[in-house]
Length: 296
Ligand code: SF4
Image 1 (tube, rainbow, N blue to C red):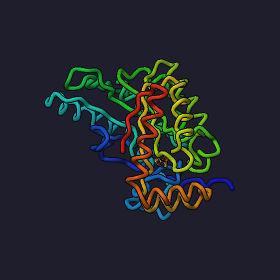
Image 2 (cartoon, rainbow, N blue to C red):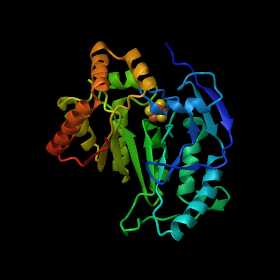
Image 3 (cartoon, rainbow, N blue to C red):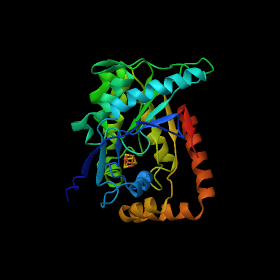
Image 4 (cartoon, protein in one colour):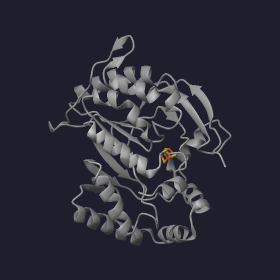
């Protein structure tokens, strides 16, 4: 069955940067995400939308995000300089900056042009590139599940401090199609990481979420970490499956019986499962000499 086209609405935003618990600021060029991953915890955003369709089937496009970003950056830079602090922006936290509509709207690309110092008709000063300890710090971190990011290698290369991350949840295209139906398949994401690294960009991988049954065994984790290491990514972060009720019920709707059983076992005894998973990840990383940060 062909996936349903999302309902699209063009909106104006008052500001582009929002305070973030992950870094200083998050920049979400869209509201909603047509990648429609079954475990998506950003689906809580649906509560704030006026769409009557379920999460994954609507997207609001912030058509003025680049102009708003230019204004926000000027203010954020002044504040950071006054406090002698670094400025980090993650793109994105509750949407994917390279979901299919980006091909048409190019909002993410134009925001990157703002970070690079260019906006049609204006020049935007670059902001801080060092943290308060004086060490180099990436200013802009892009995170996506789409190889559409390759379109923007030229702009990414012109940002002084940027890193690009791909979310990798397995190395098997059949698994990514099952749980992340519209995102690029796993092998294309790995290929994108390799191409970005070859283009001289700093890259990283986010194993998030670790999929119960499919990715949490030693064998599966070794396979994923080895594939990531071979792309030239400089670091890996790992996060657990967040067992929000909506994520769990969407996962159970499509998961094969073994994966459904594994998720139920995890949700019934989270502490034990997470301890075991943490050990597995760290042991695999140490075997392969991959730098890993576990977020749970
Ligand atoms: S790509 Fe990220 S934001 Fe988009 S549906 Fe998937 S998990 Fe949610």
